[in-house]
Image: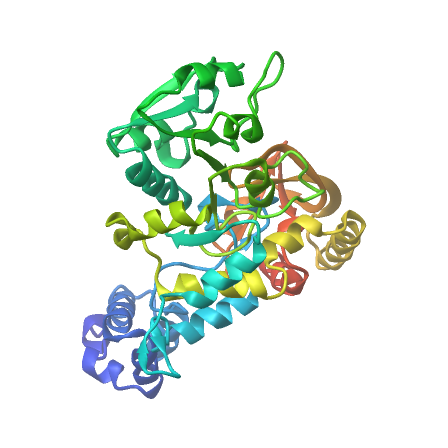
Length: 429
C-alpha cells in the first residue's frame, strides 16, 4: 500500500487552484496557507481523501480575515457586554463600510482646507441633545470621566458619595481610575445614605468638581437616600454626572434610568455617557455640557490619545440620525408578537423532530444599565445539551441555561434572523 504522505499535493499546487486563489485575494495568503497545511495533515493521517482536499479547505476558511465571528444573541440580555454590547444598525454598518475608504473626516471638500474632525457626528449629537451647549466624543465612557478628572481636578479634590464608588467591568473601579489622574477623592456620606449637606460640608477651595455616578450595575434598596443633581448644582461647584448607560432623553420604559437631557436641565455642568449601550451605537464616550468646560476638555493634551477614529464617528452619526438600532427595537418589542414568533418557530422545529417548547421568558437590559428592570419575553425551550452544540454551530447561537433547559430568548433575536436561528437549531438535532 502506498504511503499516504506521497499522495499529499504540494502547497504551491493547491494554492494555485482557482478557488484558493480567489480566497487568497479576499482573506490573505497566511490564512489560506494555514488552512491548506491543516488539510494536508488530515490527508497524511488518512482522515481526508486527496480528491476532497480543496473542497475541505474552502469549507474551513473563515468568512473574513478577522477572528471575530458574528453570533446570534439569544440570551435575552439586550446589551450583552461579552457579545460586544450594542449590535450596530444596518445604517451604521453601511456608514462604517463607507468610512473604511478615504473620507473627508478632517477635510472640507468645498474649500480644500482642513476641517473640524467628525463634524457630522458632533452635529448629530448636539442636535439630539439640544440642552447641551457643546458636545465631544472620546473612545468610551471611562475615558470621558478620565478626561474630566485630568482637566478639571488634577491636584484637586473630586467629591463623591461612598455609595457611588462603583466597580465597572473586568475589575476596574471608578475611584482607582480617578485617583490615577492625580486627583484626590473626597468621599462623603455612607454606602446607603448621602445628603446634600454631606457634599456641602466637603466643598472648599480645593474642590475640582462634584461627581454624581449612577450605580447602573447594581441596586441599593431599603433605608437609602441620595442628593439629586439639582441640589448639588445649587452648591456652586461644577457637577459632573456620569449616567453610564447612554440614555439621551427620558424613556417611559426605563423611568428610573437617568438621561442626559434631564441631568443637564437639572444643572449638571457636564454629563458623561456610553455610546454602545442604550443609545445602541458604537463604543464611545459622550461628553455633553457647558461650552467652556467642553472646550477645555477638547483642548487637553490627553484628548488626542482618547479620540475616536473615523469608523466610530461614522457609526455614531448613523445611529443618531438613522432608523432605530437593534437595541431600541429589542427594548420596544411587543411581547405578544414575541410569543407568536416563538410558537411559530417551535411548531416548525417540532415537525422536524426537535424537542422544543415555546415558553414565556424574562429578558433584561444588560450592559450595566437599568438594573432590576425585567422585560417580559418569549423563548424556545430546548434540552440543556443544545447550549454547547448551538454555541459551536454556524452561525453560533448563544442562549442561556436555566432550570435544566437551554432557552433561546427571542427579544434579542431580530425577526429577520428567525430563519437563521431555525436552521441552526435544526442542524443540531
